[in-house]
Amino acid sequence: MPSSVMSTSGSGHGGGRPSPAAAISTTGLRKSYGDKTVLDGIDLHIPAGSVFALLGPNGAGKTTTVQILSTLITADGGQARVAGHDLAADPQAVRAAIGVTGQFSAVDGLITGEENMLLMADLHHLSRREGRRVAAELLDRFDLTEAAKKPASTYSGGMKRRLDIAMTLVGDPRIIFLDEPTTGLDPRSRHNMWQIIRELVTGGVTVFLTTQYLEEADELADRIAVLNGGRIAAQGTAEELKRLIPGGHVRLRFSDPSAYRSAAAALGEASRDDEALALQIPSDGSQRELRSILDWLDAAEIEADELTVHTPDLDDVFFALTGSTSPTSSTSPTVPTQPTYPTHPKEEAR
Amino acid sequence: MSSHSLAVRDSTTMLRRNLLHARRYPSLTLNLLLTPIVMLLLFVYVFGDVMSAGIGGGGADRSEYIAYLVPGILLMTIGGTTVGTAVSVSNDMTEGIIARFRTMAIHRGSVLVGHVIGSVLQAVVSVVLVGAVGVAIGFRSTDATLLEWFAAFGLLALFALALTWIAVGMGMVSPNAEAASNNALPLIFLPLISSAFVPVDAMPGWFQPVAEYQPFTPAIETLRGLLLGTEIGNNGWIALAWCLGLAVLGYRWSKAVFNRDPK
Picture 1 (tube, rainbow over the protein chains, first blue to last red):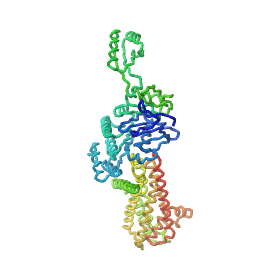
Picture 2 (picture 1 turned 180 degrees about the horizontal axis):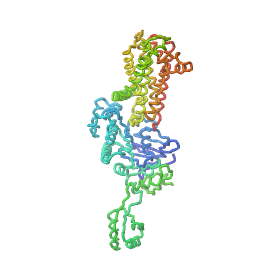
Picture 3 (picture 1 turned 135 degrees about the vertical axis):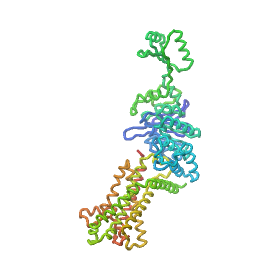
Picture 4 (picture 1 turned 60 degrees about the horizontal axis):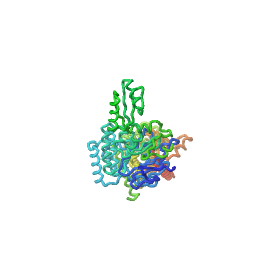
Protein backbone atom coordinates (compact mmCIF):
# COMPACT_ATOMS: atom_id res chain seq x y z
CA MET A 1 0.00 0.00 0.00
CA PRO A 2 1.56 3.27 -1.02
CA SER A 3 1.50 6.19 1.35
CA SER A 4 -2.16 6.94 1.09
CA VAL A 5 -2.96 9.30 3.88
CA MET A 6 -6.41 9.00 5.22
CA SER A 7 -7.79 12.23 6.51
CA THR A 8 -11.18 12.75 8.00
CA SER A 9 -11.02 16.47 8.52
CA GLY A 10 -8.92 19.42 7.48
CA SER A 11 -6.42 18.94 10.28
CA GLY A 12 -6.63 15.21 9.89
CA HIS A 13 -5.19 12.17 11.52
CA GLY A 14 -1.78 11.58 10.09
CA GLY A 15 -0.58 8.42 8.47
CA GLY A 16 -3.88 6.58 8.57
CA ARG A 17 -3.52 5.89 12.28
CA PRO A 18 -7.01 5.68 13.69
CA SER A 19 -7.92 7.68 16.75
CA PRO A 20 -9.00 5.60 19.73
CA ALA A 21 -12.65 6.48 19.25
CA ALA A 22 -12.84 4.81 15.86
CA ALA A 23 -15.47 2.09 15.71
CA ILE A 24 -14.26 0.96 12.32
CA SER A 25 -11.05 1.82 10.54
CA THR A 26 -9.52 0.30 7.47
CA THR A 27 -6.43 0.90 5.41
CA GLY A 28 -5.91 -0.33 1.90
CA LEU A 29 -8.60 -3.00 2.01
CA ARG A 30 -8.48 -5.15 -1.10
CA LYS A 31 -10.48 -8.03 -2.47
CA SER A 32 -10.60 -9.66 -5.85
CA TYR A 33 -12.37 -12.65 -7.29
CA GLY A 34 -10.19 -14.20 -9.92
CA ASP A 35 -8.90 -11.35 -12.04
CA LYS A 36 -11.83 -9.10 -11.16
CA THR A 37 -10.83 -6.56 -8.55
CA VAL A 38 -13.83 -5.78 -6.38
CA LEU A 39 -12.17 -3.59 -3.75
CA ASP A 40 -9.05 -1.70 -4.68
CA GLY A 41 -7.71 -0.09 -1.53
CA ILE A 42 -10.45 1.12 0.77
CA ASP A 43 -9.56 3.53 3.59
CA LEU A 44 -12.27 4.30 6.09
CA HIS A 45 -12.41 5.89 9.50
CA ILE A 46 -15.73 5.75 11.26
CA PRO A 47 -16.04 7.37 14.70
CA ALA A 48 -17.98 5.50 17.36
CA GLY A 49 -21.60 6.52 17.72
CA SER A 50 -21.98 7.86 14.19
CA VAL A 51 -23.88 6.75 11.13
CA PHE A 52 -21.77 6.02 8.13
CA ALA A 53 -23.25 5.45 4.69
CA LEU A 54 -21.45 3.68 1.91
CA LEU A 55 -23.07 4.89 -1.25
CA GLY A 56 -22.58 3.42 -4.65
CA PRO A 57 -24.15 1.92 -7.73
CA ASN A 58 -24.77 -1.80 -8.10
CA GLY A 59 -21.55 -3.75 -8.30
CA ALA A 60 -19.46 -1.01 -6.70
CA GLY A 61 -18.29 -3.32 -3.90
CA LYS A 62 -20.62 -2.23 -1.09
CA THR A 63 -21.71 -5.71 -0.08
CA THR A 64 -18.15 -7.04 -0.32
CA THR A 65 -17.03 -4.29 2.07
CA VAL A 66 -19.72 -5.23 4.57
CA GLN A 67 -18.93 -8.93 4.21
CA ILE A 68 -15.28 -8.31 4.96
CA LEU A 69 -15.88 -5.97 7.90
CA SER A 70 -18.42 -8.37 9.39
CA THR A 71 -15.95 -11.30 9.20
CA LEU A 72 -18.02 -13.23 6.66
CA ILE A 73 -15.24 -13.25 4.08
CA THR A 74 -11.55 -12.44 4.32
CA ALA A 75 -9.82 -9.56 2.57
CA ASP A 76 -6.91 -10.18 0.22
CA GLY A 77 -4.96 -7.23 1.54
CA GLY A 78 -5.01 -4.24 3.85
CA GLN A 79 -5.83 -3.86 7.52
CA ALA A 80 -9.05 -3.34 9.35
CA ARG A 81 -10.00 -2.86 12.97
CA VAL A 82 -13.57 -3.19 14.12
CA ALA A 83 -14.54 -2.32 17.70
CA GLY A 84 -10.84 -2.14 18.57
CA HIS A 85 -10.08 -5.68 17.36
CA ASP A 86 -8.00 -6.63 14.38
CA LEU A 87 -10.21 -8.32 11.82
CA ALA A 88 -7.68 -10.92 10.75
CA ALA A 89 -6.18 -11.67 14.16
CA ASP A 90 -9.28 -11.86 16.30
CA PRO A 91 -12.46 -12.27 14.23
CA GLN A 92 -14.31 -13.86 17.14
CA ALA A 93 -13.87 -10.69 19.25
CA VAL A 94 -15.15 -8.63 16.34
CA ARG A 95 -18.17 -10.92 16.02
CA ALA A 96 -18.97 -10.43 19.70
CA ALA A 97 -19.22 -6.66 19.18
CA ILE A 98 -21.16 -6.47 15.93
CA GLY A 99 -24.61 -7.15 14.56
CA VAL A 100 -25.19 -7.75 10.88
CA THR A 101 -28.28 -7.45 8.76
CA GLY A 102 -27.35 -8.55 5.28
CA GLN A 103 -28.99 -7.66 2.03
CA PHE A 104 -30.84 -10.96 1.90
CA SER A 105 -33.09 -11.90 4.70
CA ALA A 106 -31.21 -13.79 7.40
CA VAL A 107 -34.17 -15.27 9.21
CA ASP A 108 -35.01 -18.94 9.55
CA GLY A 109 -38.19 -19.21 7.49
CA LEU A 110 -39.12 -22.64 8.81
CA ILE A 111 -39.66 -21.50 12.37
CA THR A 112 -41.76 -18.69 13.85
CA GLY A 113 -40.65 -15.13 14.45
CA GLU A 114 -40.59 -15.76 18.18
CA GLU A 115 -38.55 -18.93 17.76
CA ASN A 116 -36.09 -17.00 15.62
CA MET A 117 -35.71 -14.47 18.43
CA LEU A 118 -35.28 -17.18 21.08
CA LEU A 119 -32.70 -18.89 18.87
CA MET A 120 -30.70 -15.65 18.87
CA ALA A 121 -31.09 -15.33 22.64
CA ASP A 122 -29.76 -18.88 23.09
CA LEU A 123 -26.82 -18.21 20.80
CA HIS A 124 -26.01 -15.10 22.83
CA HIS A 125 -26.14 -17.30 25.93
CA LEU A 126 -28.86 -15.37 27.66
CA SER A 127 -30.70 -17.15 30.43
CA ARG A 128 -34.10 -18.55 29.47
CA ARG A 129 -35.90 -15.82 31.38
CA GLU A 130 -33.74 -13.03 30.03
CA GLY A 131 -34.07 -14.45 26.52
CA ARG A 132 -37.85 -14.45 26.71
CA ARG A 133 -37.88 -10.92 28.03
CA VAL A 134 -35.56 -9.58 25.33
CA ALA A 135 -37.43 -11.45 22.58
CA ALA A 136 -40.82 -10.16 23.71
CA GLU A 137 -39.49 -6.62 24.07
CA LEU A 138 -37.93 -6.53 20.59
CA LEU A 139 -40.91 -8.20 18.94
CA ASP A 140 -43.07 -5.52 20.49
CA ARG A 141 -40.70 -2.71 19.50
CA PHE A 142 -40.71 -3.87 15.89
CA ASP A 143 -44.45 -4.38 15.81
CA LEU A 144 -44.21 -8.13 15.35
CA THR A 145 -45.99 -9.36 18.47
CA GLU A 146 -49.11 -10.27 16.54
CA ALA A 147 -47.17 -12.31 13.97
CA ALA A 148 -44.78 -13.82 16.53
CA LYS A 149 -46.34 -17.28 16.41
CA LYS A 150 -46.41 -17.51 12.62
CA PRO A 151 -43.63 -19.06 10.50
CA ALA A 152 -41.25 -16.36 9.33
CA SER A 153 -41.60 -17.58 5.74
CA THR A 154 -45.15 -16.20 5.73
CA TYR A 155 -43.99 -12.67 6.62
CA SER A 156 -44.10 -9.79 4.14
CA GLY A 157 -40.86 -8.22 2.94
CA GLY A 158 -41.10 -5.38 5.44
CA MET A 159 -41.90 -7.71 8.33
CA LYS A 160 -39.00 -10.00 7.45
CA ARG A 161 -36.67 -7.00 7.40
CA ARG A 162 -37.95 -5.88 10.79
CA LEU A 163 -37.52 -9.38 12.21
CA ASP A 164 -34.05 -9.45 10.71
CA ILE A 165 -33.07 -6.25 12.51
CA ALA A 166 -34.75 -7.35 15.73
CA MET A 167 -32.64 -10.55 15.62
CA THR A 168 -29.53 -8.47 15.03
CA LEU A 169 -30.28 -6.43 18.16
CA VAL A 170 -30.66 -9.38 20.55
CA GLY A 171 -27.02 -9.32 21.59
CA ASP A 172 -26.99 -5.54 22.12
CA PRO A 173 -24.26 -4.99 19.50
CA ARG A 174 -22.22 -1.78 19.63
CA ILE A 175 -21.70 -1.72 15.87
CA ILE A 176 -24.41 -2.59 13.40
CA PHE A 177 -23.94 -3.30 9.71
CA LEU A 178 -26.97 -2.80 7.51
CA ASP A 179 -26.52 -3.81 3.90
CA GLU A 180 -29.11 -1.98 1.83
CA PRO A 181 -31.64 -2.03 4.65
CA THR A 182 -34.45 -0.47 2.63
CA THR A 183 -33.98 -2.02 -0.78
CA GLY A 184 -37.26 -3.50 -1.90
CA LEU A 185 -39.32 -1.84 0.80
CA ASP A 186 -42.35 0.34 0.10
CA PRO A 187 -42.05 4.04 1.01
CA ARG A 188 -43.87 3.62 4.28
CA SER A 189 -41.69 0.70 5.41
CA ARG A 190 -38.67 2.67 4.30
CA HIS A 191 -39.56 5.59 6.53
CA ASN A 192 -40.20 3.16 9.39
CA MET A 193 -36.74 1.70 8.82
CA TRP A 194 -35.20 5.18 8.91
CA GLN A 195 -36.92 5.80 12.21
CA ILE A 196 -35.52 2.54 13.56
CA ILE A 197 -32.02 3.47 12.47
CA ARG A 198 -32.28 6.91 14.10
CA GLU A 199 -33.38 5.29 17.35
CA LEU A 200 -30.40 2.96 17.25
CA VAL A 201 -28.06 5.89 16.98
CA THR A 202 -29.71 7.62 19.91
CA GLY A 203 -28.68 4.58 21.93
CA GLY A 204 -25.02 5.22 21.08
CA VAL A 205 -24.70 2.48 18.48
CA THR A 206 -22.43 2.92 15.47
CA VAL A 207 -24.26 2.22 12.24
CA PHE A 208 -22.54 1.25 8.99
CA LEU A 209 -25.08 1.18 6.20
CA THR A 210 -24.89 0.75 2.49
CA THR A 211 -27.41 2.21 0.15
CA GLN A 212 -27.94 3.14 -3.45
CA TYR A 213 -30.41 5.81 -2.44
CA LEU A 214 -28.88 9.25 -2.08
CA GLU A 215 -31.87 10.48 -0.19
CA GLU A 216 -31.30 7.80 2.39
CA ALA A 217 -27.64 8.67 2.89
CA ASP A 218 -28.53 12.36 3.10
CA GLU A 219 -31.29 11.63 5.59
CA LEU A 220 -29.41 9.35 7.95
CA ALA A 221 -25.69 9.55 7.66
CA ASP A 222 -23.19 11.74 9.50
CA ARG A 223 -20.63 10.83 6.92
CA ILE A 224 -20.92 9.42 3.44
CA ALA A 225 -18.40 7.68 1.24
CA VAL A 226 -19.09 7.24 -2.43
CA LEU A 227 -17.80 3.89 -3.61
CA ASN A 228 -17.25 3.39 -7.29
CA GLY A 229 -15.42 0.60 -9.06
CA GLY A 230 -13.86 -0.64 -5.83
CA ARG A 231 -12.47 2.75 -4.79
CA ILE A 232 -13.68 5.51 -2.54
CA ALA A 233 -14.39 8.28 -5.01
CA ALA A 234 -15.09 10.82 -2.26
CA GLN A 235 -16.07 10.97 1.36
CA GLY A 236 -17.33 13.53 3.80
CA THR A 237 -20.57 14.91 5.16
CA ALA A 238 -23.47 15.37 2.80
CA GLU A 239 -22.76 19.11 2.79
CA GLU A 240 -19.12 18.61 2.00
CA LEU A 241 -19.97 16.30 -0.84
CA LYS A 242 -22.45 18.75 -2.28
CA ARG A 243 -19.87 21.51 -2.12
CA LEU A 244 -17.61 19.33 -4.22
CA ILE A 245 -19.76 19.72 -7.23
CA PRO A 246 -20.22 23.09 -8.84
CA GLY A 247 -23.70 23.26 -10.17
CA GLY A 248 -25.68 25.71 -8.02
CA HIS A 249 -27.24 28.13 -10.44
CA VAL A 250 -30.23 30.21 -11.36
CA ARG A 251 -31.80 29.37 -14.66
CA LEU A 252 -33.65 31.98 -16.68
CA ARG A 253 -35.80 30.81 -19.53
CA PHE A 254 -37.18 33.03 -22.26
CA SER A 255 -39.81 32.52 -24.92
CA ASP A 256 -38.88 35.64 -26.87
CA PRO A 257 -35.59 35.12 -28.77
CA SER A 258 -34.78 38.83 -28.84
CA ALA A 259 -35.22 39.15 -25.06
CA TYR A 260 -32.99 36.09 -24.71
CA ARG A 261 -30.31 37.64 -26.92
CA SER A 262 -30.25 40.96 -25.13
CA ALA A 263 -30.16 39.27 -21.73
CA ALA A 264 -27.34 37.01 -22.89
CA ALA A 265 -25.41 39.99 -24.20
CA ALA A 266 -25.87 41.89 -20.95
CA LEU A 267 -25.08 38.92 -18.76
CA GLY A 268 -21.59 38.01 -19.83
CA GLU A 269 -20.95 35.50 -17.07
CA ALA A 270 -24.01 33.40 -17.81
CA SER A 271 -23.70 30.22 -19.77
CA ARG A 272 -26.02 30.06 -22.76
CA ASP A 273 -28.35 27.35 -23.93
CA ASP A 274 -29.40 28.76 -27.32
CA GLU A 275 -31.72 25.94 -28.16
CA ALA A 276 -33.82 26.22 -25.01
CA LEU A 277 -33.43 30.02 -24.87
CA ALA A 278 -32.12 29.64 -21.34
CA LEU A 279 -29.32 31.24 -19.34
CA GLN A 280 -27.58 29.75 -16.35
CA ILE A 281 -26.09 32.10 -13.79
CA PRO A 282 -23.86 30.53 -11.16
CA SER A 283 -25.38 31.14 -7.75
CA ASP A 284 -25.59 29.56 -4.34
CA GLY A 285 -29.33 30.13 -4.36
CA SER A 286 -29.29 32.48 -1.36
CA GLN A 287 -31.95 35.15 -0.94
CA ARG A 288 -29.38 37.89 -1.33
CA GLU A 289 -28.05 36.59 -4.62
CA LEU A 290 -31.56 36.02 -5.95
CA ARG A 291 -32.56 39.57 -5.07
CA SER A 292 -29.56 40.99 -6.82
CA ILE A 293 -30.35 38.99 -9.94
CA LEU A 294 -33.95 40.17 -9.85
CA ASP A 295 -32.89 43.78 -9.26
CA TRP A 296 -30.53 43.55 -12.15
CA LEU A 297 -33.18 42.08 -14.45
CA ASP A 298 -35.57 44.89 -13.49
CA ALA A 299 -32.93 47.54 -14.08
CA ALA A 300 -32.16 46.13 -17.51
CA GLU A 301 -35.91 45.81 -18.20
CA ILE A 302 -35.58 42.19 -19.07
CA GLU A 303 -38.54 39.90 -18.46
CA ALA A 304 -37.72 36.19 -18.09
CA ASP A 305 -40.57 33.73 -18.55
CA GLU A 306 -39.32 31.35 -15.95
CA LEU A 307 -36.83 31.49 -13.14
CA THR A 308 -35.69 28.36 -11.36
CA VAL A 309 -33.14 27.94 -8.62
CA HIS A 310 -31.05 24.81 -8.75
CA THR A 311 -28.94 23.81 -5.74
CA PRO A 312 -26.64 20.82 -6.07
CA ASP A 313 -27.93 17.73 -4.33
CA LEU A 314 -26.34 14.37 -3.75
CA ASP A 315 -27.68 13.22 -7.08
CA ASP A 316 -25.33 15.65 -8.78
CA VAL A 317 -22.47 14.39 -6.65
CA PHE A 318 -23.35 10.80 -7.29
CA PHE A 319 -23.61 11.15 -11.01
CA ALA A 320 -20.55 13.33 -11.23
CA LEU A 321 -18.51 10.79 -9.28
CA THR A 322 -19.91 7.57 -10.61
CA GLY A 323 -21.79 8.33 -13.77
CA SER A 324 -18.99 8.80 -16.23
CA THR A 325 -17.05 5.70 -15.32
CA SER A 326 -18.06 2.12 -15.58
CA PRO A 327 -17.45 0.11 -12.41
CA THR A 328 -14.55 -1.80 -13.97
CA SER A 329 -12.81 1.25 -15.35
CA SER A 330 -9.64 2.11 -13.55
CA THR A 331 -9.82 5.81 -14.24
CA SER A 332 -11.39 7.85 -11.50
CA PRO A 333 -13.45 10.93 -12.00
CA THR A 334 -11.67 14.17 -11.44
CA VAL A 335 -12.63 15.75 -8.20
CA PRO A 336 -11.96 19.44 -7.84
CA THR A 337 -9.40 20.15 -5.19
CA GLN A 338 -10.84 21.65 -2.07
CA PRO A 339 -8.37 22.13 0.74
CA THR A 340 -10.90 21.60 3.52
CA TYR A 341 -12.35 18.55 1.91
CA PRO A 342 -11.03 15.04 2.49
CA THR A 343 -10.47 13.26 -0.74
CA HIS A 344 -8.48 10.31 -1.78
CA PRO A 345 -5.00 11.68 -2.46
CA LYS A 346 -4.37 9.14 -5.15
CA GLU A 347 -7.33 10.35 -7.10
CA GLU A 348 -6.19 13.91 -6.88
CA ALA A 349 -2.80 13.02 -8.14
CA ARG A 350 -4.18 11.94 -11.45
CA MET B 1 -17.39 -19.57 29.24
CA SER B 2 -14.74 -22.07 28.21
CA SER B 3 -14.53 -22.95 24.56
CA HIS B 4 -15.59 -26.51 25.34
CA SER B 5 -18.81 -25.61 27.14
CA LEU B 6 -19.43 -22.97 24.44
CA ALA B 7 -19.21 -25.72 21.83
CA VAL B 8 -21.62 -27.95 23.75
CA ARG B 9 -24.07 -25.15 24.43
CA ASP B 10 -24.15 -23.80 20.87
CA SER B 11 -24.32 -27.27 19.37
CA THR B 12 -27.27 -28.07 21.63
CA THR B 13 -29.00 -24.87 20.48
CA MET B 14 -28.41 -25.82 16.85
CA LEU B 15 -29.64 -29.37 17.50
CA ARG B 16 -32.83 -27.96 19.01
CA ARG B 17 -33.28 -25.87 15.88
CA ASN B 18 -32.87 -28.90 13.62
CA LEU B 19 -35.24 -31.02 15.67
CA LEU B 20 -37.75 -28.18 15.55
CA HIS B 21 -37.49 -28.19 11.76
CA ALA B 22 -37.98 -31.97 11.70
CA ARG B 23 -41.00 -31.71 13.98
CA ARG B 24 -42.54 -28.82 12.03
CA TYR B 25 -41.97 -30.40 8.64
CA PRO B 26 -42.02 -34.17 9.12
CA SER B 27 -42.97 -34.86 5.50
CA LEU B 28 -39.36 -35.00 4.27
CA THR B 29 -38.39 -37.59 6.88
CA LEU B 30 -41.59 -39.57 6.41
CA ASN B 31 -41.23 -39.61 2.61
CA LEU B 32 -37.75 -41.03 2.99
CA LEU B 33 -39.18 -43.79 5.20
CA LEU B 34 -41.53 -44.88 2.43
CA THR B 35 -38.78 -46.23 0.17
CA PRO B 36 -37.39 -48.88 2.56
CA ILE B 37 -40.87 -49.89 3.73
CA VAL B 38 -42.13 -50.28 0.17
CA MET B 39 -38.99 -52.22 -0.75
CA LEU B 40 -39.51 -54.50 2.24
CA LEU B 41 -43.12 -55.24 1.37
CA LEU B 42 -42.41 -55.55 -2.34
CA PHE B 43 -39.57 -58.02 -1.94
CA VAL B 44 -41.38 -60.08 0.69
CA TYR B 45 -44.92 -60.20 -0.72
CA VAL B 46 -44.40 -59.75 -4.46
CA PHE B 47 -40.98 -61.18 -5.26
CA GLY B 48 -40.71 -63.19 -2.03
CA ASP B 49 -41.27 -66.67 -3.47
CA VAL B 50 -38.68 -66.22 -6.20
CA MET B 51 -36.18 -64.45 -3.95
CA SER B 52 -36.37 -66.99 -1.16
CA ALA B 53 -35.51 -69.72 -3.63
CA GLY B 54 -32.18 -68.00 -4.16
CA ILE B 55 -30.93 -68.01 -0.56
CA GLY B 56 -29.67 -70.73 1.67
CA GLY B 57 -29.02 -73.04 -1.30
CA GLY B 58 -32.68 -73.05 -2.32
CA GLY B 59 -35.78 -74.34 -0.59
CA ALA B 60 -36.00 -71.46 1.93
CA ASP B 61 -39.47 -70.19 2.70
CA ARG B 62 -40.79 -66.70 2.90
CA SER B 63 -40.12 -66.21 6.62
CA GLU B 64 -36.48 -67.07 6.07
CA TYR B 65 -36.30 -64.45 3.35
CA ILE B 66 -37.83 -61.87 5.71
CA ALA B 67 -35.05 -62.67 8.17
CA TYR B 68 -32.48 -62.32 5.39
CA LEU B 69 -33.93 -59.05 4.08
CA VAL B 70 -34.63 -56.99 7.22
CA PRO B 71 -31.03 -56.21 8.25
CA GLY B 72 -30.31 -54.86 4.78
CA ILE B 73 -33.53 -52.83 4.77
CA LEU B 74 -32.58 -51.29 8.13
CA LEU B 75 -29.25 -50.07 6.77
CA MET B 76 -30.96 -48.92 3.61
CA THR B 77 -33.24 -46.83 5.83
CA ILE B 78 -30.19 -45.04 7.15
CA GLY B 79 -28.97 -44.39 3.59
CA GLY B 80 -32.38 -42.88 2.83
CA THR B 81 -32.58 -40.57 5.84
CA THR B 82 -29.11 -39.22 5.13
CA VAL B 83 -30.31 -38.10 1.70
CA GLY B 84 -32.70 -35.93 3.72
CA THR B 85 -29.67 -34.63 5.61
CA ALA B 86 -27.92 -33.61 2.40
CA VAL B 87 -31.06 -31.81 1.23
CA SER B 88 -31.62 -29.95 4.49
CA VAL B 89 -27.96 -28.97 4.83
CA SER B 90 -27.98 -27.65 1.27
CA ASN B 91 -31.21 -25.77 1.95
CA ASP B 92 -29.73 -24.29 5.09
CA MET B 93 -26.49 -23.21 3.44
CA THR B 94 -28.35 -21.27 0.77
CA GLU B 95 -30.39 -19.41 3.42
CA GLY B 96 -29.28 -16.07 4.79
CA ILE B 97 -29.46 -17.37 8.33
CA ILE B 98 -26.12 -19.19 7.87
CA ALA B 99 -24.44 -15.88 7.04
CA ARG B 100 -25.85 -14.59 10.31
CA PHE B 101 -24.46 -17.58 12.25
CA ARG B 102 -21.08 -17.03 10.64
CA THR B 103 -20.93 -13.44 11.88
CA MET B 104 -21.90 -14.32 15.44
CA ALA B 105 -19.51 -15.17 18.24
CA ILE B 106 -20.65 -18.76 18.47
CA HIS B 107 -18.79 -22.03 18.24
CA ARG B 108 -18.09 -22.28 14.55
CA GLY B 109 -18.74 -25.97 14.10
CA SER B 110 -22.03 -25.91 16.00
CA VAL B 111 -24.16 -25.47 12.87
CA LEU B 112 -22.81 -28.70 11.40
CA VAL B 113 -22.75 -30.60 14.66
CA GLY B 114 -26.40 -29.68 15.19
CA HIS B 115 -27.24 -31.08 11.77
CA VAL B 116 -25.28 -34.27 12.34
CA ILE B 117 -26.70 -35.12 15.77
CA GLY B 118 -30.20 -34.25 14.59
CA SER B 119 -29.81 -36.49 11.56
CA VAL B 120 -28.43 -39.40 13.52
CA LEU B 121 -31.39 -39.14 15.91
CA GLN B 122 -33.79 -39.08 12.98
CA ALA B 123 -32.05 -42.06 11.41
CA VAL B 124 -32.33 -44.03 14.65
CA VAL B 125 -36.04 -43.21 14.94
CA SER B 126 -36.51 -44.22 11.29
CA VAL B 127 -34.71 -47.51 11.85
CA VAL B 128 -36.95 -48.23 14.82
CA LEU B 129 -40.07 -47.49 12.73
CA VAL B 130 -38.96 -49.61 9.78
CA GLY B 131 -37.82 -52.33 12.19
CA ALA B 132 -41.32 -52.29 13.71
CA VAL B 133 -42.79 -52.92 10.26
CA GLY B 134 -40.31 -55.80 9.85
CA VAL B 135 -41.39 -57.29 13.18
CA ALA B 136 -45.04 -56.82 12.20
CA ILE B 137 -44.59 -58.93 9.07
CA GLY B 138 -42.81 -61.66 10.92
CA PHE B 139 -39.14 -60.77 11.49
CA ARG B 140 -37.73 -62.32 14.63
CA SER B 141 -34.23 -62.26 15.99
CA THR B 142 -33.37 -65.91 16.54
CA ASP B 143 -30.67 -65.90 19.15
CA ALA B 144 -29.41 -62.39 19.85
CA THR B 145 -28.21 -61.83 23.40
CA LEU B 146 -28.66 -58.50 25.13
CA LEU B 147 -25.05 -57.69 24.32
CA GLU B 148 -25.64 -58.48 20.65
CA TRP B 149 -28.69 -56.22 20.63
CA PHE B 150 -26.56 -53.42 22.01
CA ALA B 151 -23.87 -54.13 19.44
CA ALA B 152 -26.48 -54.12 16.64
CA PHE B 153 -27.85 -50.83 17.87
CA GLY B 154 -24.35 -49.38 18.15
CA LEU B 155 -23.51 -50.48 14.63
CA LEU B 156 -26.65 -48.83 13.26
CA ALA B 157 -25.89 -45.59 15.10
CA LEU B 158 -22.25 -45.56 14.01
CA PHE B 159 -23.24 -46.31 10.42
CA ALA B 160 -25.74 -43.45 10.59
CA LEU B 161 -23.06 -41.11 11.95
CA ALA B 162 -20.63 -42.04 9.15
CA LEU B 163 -23.15 -41.63 6.33
CA THR B 164 -24.48 -38.42 7.89
CA TRP B 165 -21.08 -36.72 7.82
CA ILE B 166 -20.68 -37.75 4.18
CA ALA B 167 -24.18 -36.44 3.44
CA VAL B 168 -23.37 -33.14 5.19
CA GLY B 169 -20.38 -32.74 2.88
CA MET B 170 -22.55 -33.55 -0.12
CA GLY B 171 -25.13 -31.00 1.01
CA MET B 172 -22.45 -28.35 1.54
CA VAL B 173 -21.05 -28.60 -2.00
CA SER B 174 -24.51 -28.70 -3.62
CA PRO B 175 -25.79 -25.35 -4.85
CA ASN B 176 -29.43 -26.24 -4.19
CA ALA B 177 -31.73 -28.91 -2.80
CA GLU B 178 -32.22 -30.67 -6.16
CA ALA B 179 -28.49 -30.98 -6.70
CA ALA B 180 -28.09 -32.22 -3.12
CA SER B 181 -30.62 -34.98 -3.59
CA ASN B 182 -28.92 -36.02 -6.84
CA ASN B 183 -25.46 -35.94 -5.29
CA ALA B 184 -26.67 -38.10 -2.42
CA LEU B 185 -28.12 -40.77 -4.71
CA PRO B 186 -25.24 -43.22 -4.08
CA LEU B 187 -26.44 -43.46 -0.48
CA ILE B 188 -29.68 -44.98 -1.80
CA PHE B 189 -28.10 -46.78 -4.72
CA LEU B 190 -25.32 -48.62 -2.84
CA PRO B 191 -27.59 -50.87 -0.75
CA LEU B 192 -29.34 -52.05 -3.94
CA ILE B 193 -26.04 -53.49 -5.16
CA SER B 194 -25.03 -54.91 -1.79
CA SER B 195 -25.89 -58.18 -0.13
CA ALA B 196 -29.16 -56.67 1.12
CA PHE B 197 -31.46 -58.55 -1.30
CA VAL B 198 -29.43 -61.52 -2.48
CA PRO B 199 -26.16 -63.05 -1.25
CA VAL B 200 -23.05 -61.78 -2.96
CA ASP B 201 -22.08 -65.24 -4.17
CA ALA B 202 -25.39 -65.49 -6.02
CA MET B 203 -24.32 -62.54 -8.19
CA PRO B 204 -22.35 -62.82 -11.45
CA GLY B 205 -18.64 -63.17 -10.79
CA TRP B 206 -17.59 -59.91 -12.36
CA PHE B 207 -20.09 -58.02 -10.21
CA GLN B 208 -19.17 -59.58 -6.89
CA PRO B 209 -16.30 -57.16 -6.10
CA VAL B 210 -18.69 -54.21 -6.59
CA ALA B 211 -21.02 -55.67 -4.00
CA GLU B 212 -18.21 -56.78 -1.74
CA TYR B 213 -16.04 -53.68 -1.51
CA GLN B 214 -18.52 -51.08 -0.32
CA PRO B 215 -19.69 -50.08 3.14
CA PHE B 216 -23.17 -51.62 3.05
CA THR B 217 -22.28 -55.29 2.54
CA PRO B 218 -19.96 -55.74 5.54
CA ALA B 219 -22.36 -53.71 7.73
CA ILE B 220 -25.32 -55.85 6.59
CA GLU B 221 -23.42 -59.09 7.16
CA THR B 222 -22.42 -57.94 10.64
CA LEU B 223 -25.98 -56.97 11.52
CA ARG B 224 -27.23 -60.36 10.24
CA GLY B 225 -24.66 -62.10 12.35
CA LEU B 226 -25.63 -60.15 15.46
CA LEU B 227 -29.39 -60.62 15.07
CA LEU B 228 -29.58 -64.02 13.39
CA GLY B 229 -26.42 -65.79 14.46
CA THR B 230 -24.92 -66.15 10.99
CA GLU B 231 -21.19 -66.12 10.44
CA ILE B 232 -19.73 -62.59 10.88
CA GLY B 233 -16.10 -63.42 10.14
CA ASN B 234 -14.03 -60.30 9.75
CA ASN B 235 -17.04 -58.34 8.44
CA GLY B 236 -17.38 -56.73 11.85
CA TRP B 237 -13.94 -55.14 11.66
CA ILE B 238 -14.38 -54.18 8.02
CA ALA B 239 -17.70 -52.52 8.80
CA LEU B 240 -16.14 -50.67 11.72
CA ALA B 241 -13.27 -49.48 9.52
CA TRP B 242 -15.70 -48.27 6.85
CA CYS B 243 -17.73 -46.37 9.46
CA LEU B 244 -14.74 -44.68 11.06
CA GLY B 245 -13.14 -43.92 7.71
CA LEU B 246 -16.29 -42.39 6.24
CA ALA B 247 -17.01 -40.44 9.42
CA VAL B 248 -13.53 -38.90 9.51
CA LEU B 249 -13.54 -38.22 5.78
CA GLY B 250 -17.01 -36.65 5.88
CA TYR B 251 -16.13 -34.58 8.94
CA ARG B 252 -12.94 -33.19 7.40
CA TRP B 253 -14.60 -32.55 4.06
CA SER B 254 -17.58 -30.73 5.61
CA LYS B 255 -15.36 -28.68 7.88
CA ALA B 256 -13.09 -27.64 5.02
CA VAL B 257 -16.02 -26.56 2.89
CA PHE B 258 -17.65 -24.71 5.78
CA ASN B 259 -14.45 -22.79 6.54
CA ARG B 260 -14.14 -21.58 2.98
CA ASP B 261 -15.36 -18.07 2.25
CA PRO B 262 -19.01 -18.31 1.25
CA LYS B 263 -19.78 -17.28 -2.29
